[in-house]
Length: 193
Image (cartoon, rainbow, N blue to C red):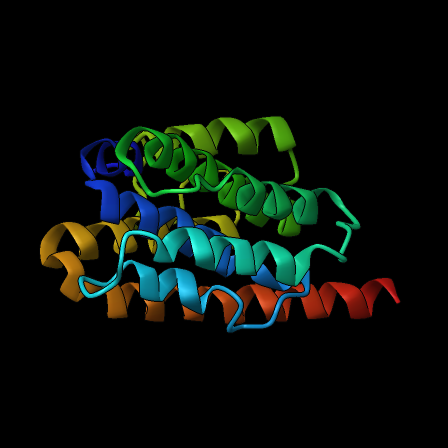
């Protein structure tokens, strides 16, 4: 199933986890602590109260308010956090999850740019919609983007297949992606400095 189809079929929790996981993987661009989004993850468990998401969101935003984005990738990550809905209700969280998916893939493309950006963008749209194989390397899609696409699909499949029980594994997938992006950002900083 394509990423677009998985997002279309996901329930509220799956959508909230999908958007949060994309944001979590891009956290190194914002200079945030790895634990910054932990309250939001906790708010998506079955035991969490309805207001826990909003409180966690306020804490995350407050934890990053003094840090200004220094490039396009960081700006996209900042917008993901800014656009998060105050409550993970169906319609707003669906729009947010889809926007986070696109932004995260774009961030990964910016950090691992293809030789021909126009062709990479077209290939990315095709892969996301399931018109090209996501398992292997689709033509024109950089490896960093292909790995992020696989992570997004995995997170949605985990929630669709296991419900709340898939949350822990989704967090593990996200943590792995954050480590990869942190290494990419670190290498990029060293190369620029």
